[in-house]
Image 1 (cartoon, helix red, strand yellow):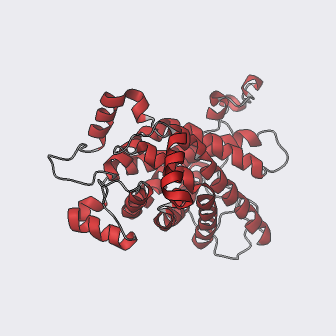
Image 2 (cartoon, rainbow, N blue to C red):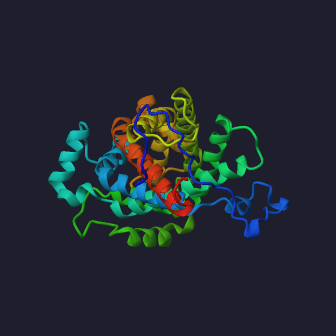
Image 3 (tube, one colour):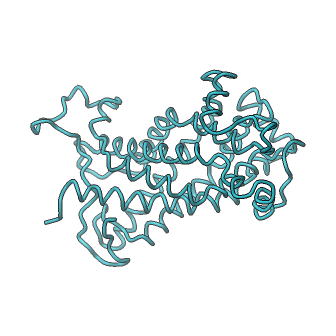
Length: 338
């Protein structure tokens, strides 16, 4: 991995590798592309961001998948008799372990790893490409709204590719009886095929609208992360885009994630319930009305503690791996700093 400066050191570190568009024979991209179109953004795509995001997403989910399982179980806990009753995080983990062993703790791992790797890879790829597009021709630095809208757009683009995997993950995680004769789904591909046969494309995109609303989560997280990095580097008298140490990345990523989760968690509960196979909801408003009527405001925050325990370290792992892998690949492409 790329070397990072020790905490507190005033370094003239170069910024992350250039994301200026690839220009054949040093020609500028035609002005006709100077609009926010997918083609214009494509010229700013860099494989380093894709690879770094994929590796970071996969590693974090391999480590923390059991806690993600607990989060989903709590999020859909609405009193149905079919669901086990859990007294807390430890009891949930113990119950799953006792019933199904290690395999039970890793239900839904395949779509989760595929989804997380693809999601983070595409997200970082699209986000940095959109940032680069917005920066082109500007003399001033990007501001908080630029980061906010870049991340929201990247999240929407990513969700179009990954929503079927999230539906699959949720269905697999909510299989409470794993005896072969009662198990409805058997792996990621089997789940995708059965959902498609039963509900068509619409079934694979259940929860898509709450997911779009959920782009606000990533937007708030990335905006906070970028602004904290900038302000911290200014405070340390460094270049605004200077690399940080691992502990600095972890601290900033954790603060950004906790802020985003606190602000947007209810949508995750709504989305998980829409994707659940044990109860049918007519839409977002039906989920909200039913949850409010039966459980009150607490219903919209079920599972937030295991969520924070899961996503905060997962986010830290993802961002640290991404920042270092992408910078390492950039260094390979651009050569040593002279």
